[in-house]
Length: 277
Image 1 (tube, rainbow, N blue to C red):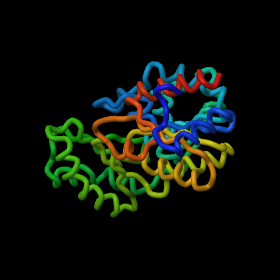
Image 2: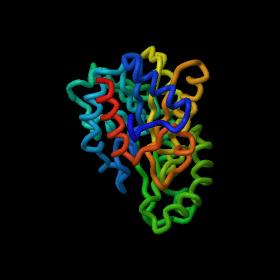
Image 3: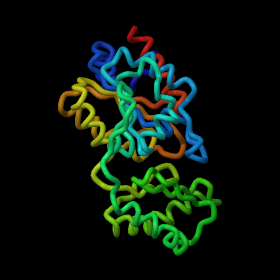
């Protein structure tokens, strides 16, 4: 695909499979940092303005499209402009790392009951943050009762605050049966058992996909990258795409193709839709 040529043999094999059999391909994407630019306030995040047209153009040509995100599904649906969008009947949004499921076909979300540890962590969090140094500018994001995220992007020294808070927040999470998911200047306390890799593998099985493209930008996407590696071992071609940034570089070293942030992801999707005719 011109400038979108994978740099690895496995990536080239996957792109060939996607191009020759698009109707058996699952296209799966992270939201923040991949479809939507990272912003200081996550509530202000919106999908790139060309994301919806690109997805709408690609959707009829592939088996399914999934957005896999740590956000509540309804927030990703709202911020992506997916609700009621024509041409996206086979879109699924897997929120909270797959714990929530929104189907474009039904416009409904299904989810299990929240983990009780989340409420316990929320109650203790202010005291833990104060004991850890206070860190002016650090703020807490409620994630629909299913997770709590501590953001350090607004602190005077964001990375220093992130590093200082990681250990006490990990201890707090462990006391209540949760785990800490690190991201781009954010530490999310959430229930164990689900991650983007588990969600991706489950969705591949559910759709019967015979090839997969996954695009992500952050540490939380590493399990999905590992899932694609497993699929490759099982004979399912997979293309790993990194939405590149200067904040997280781990994904770039694992990816078959690195693009320039959400704008680059959108161009890739648009060009792929055009190539598939």
